[in-house]
Image 1 (spheres, rainbow, N blue to C red):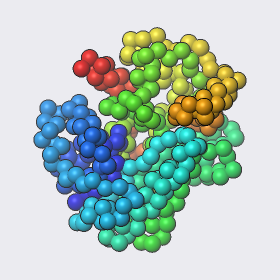
Image 2: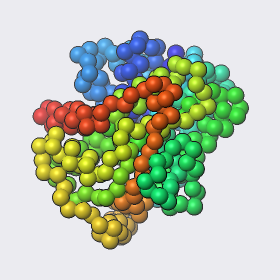
Image 3: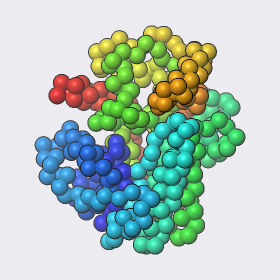
Length: 339
C-alpha cells in the first residue's frame, strides 16, 4: 500500500488521481476535513466519477508531528510520497516552517526506516538549489547551496528537510528527491499556490518583474514521481522544470488565456524595495500577514535558469509544453469562475 502525505494539496491531489489511474492501493493523510472537498473538485476536472475515485482512498487524519497518528498511517505501507509542507515566505513564520518542514520530514524519514519502507519520494523545491554569479549559467543538481545567501525561511527549511532525507539514506532508506520549479496546476486559486497567480492576473495585475525562473506542469511532476518510485533509481535528486520563463512572458501568456490585458509596467528594483519595506511596516502595525518580503522581492528580480537534463536522460522523459499547460490551467480557472 502507498502512503501520500499532503494529499489535499496541489501536488498531492494530482498524485492521488495519477496513482488511482493505475489502480494503486492508497492511504492519504489529511489534517482538516474541509480540505477533502478540494480533492474531489480536482478529480472532477478529469473524471465524471470523481466521488467513486475519491472513495477508493483510505483517508487518515494525522499531523506530521504527531507520532502516534503517523504510526497508524504507516501500518501496512510499502512506499511513501511525502508531499506535505508548509509554504510561507514570512520571516515571522520561521519556527512553524521548521516544525512542519524539517521536524515533520524527520518524523516521516524515521518512521520509513522503522517500518522498512521500500522507497520514499520527497517533494522539495528549486528554492533549495544554489545559484551562479553568472545568471546565464544553468543551475543543476550539483549546484551547491549557499548558506550565506539571503535565502527565504521557506528555502532554508526545505533544504533542512532534504538533509533529513539524505540522513535517512545513510541509515538504509531508499529515497528520491524531486525539485520542481513553479508548479502550474488547477484547483488551488488562493494562498501560496501558483494558482493564485491566475487569480491575480484575472483581477488585473499592473506590474511585471524582470526575473526569470523555472516552470513545470503538475502532471509532469506527479508522473515523474511515479516513474522514479517504480524503477531501481535510489538516493538521487532531480530538477523538474519544463521551461525557464520570464515572469513577463508568463503573465502575458496567462492574460491571453484569461482574456485580460497583461501587465505593461515593469516593477523596477527601487519600487519593489520600497513596497516590501512599506509592507513590513503595515504588517507590524496591523498584524496582517506580509504580502511581499525582501527575499520574495529579490526572487522576482533574479534570473535563475534550471537544467532538467538529468531527469530527461534517465527516464527518457519529455516535459509538457508550458504554453499548453498555462492554457489548460487558465481555462479551468475560468470554468471555476463561471461555477
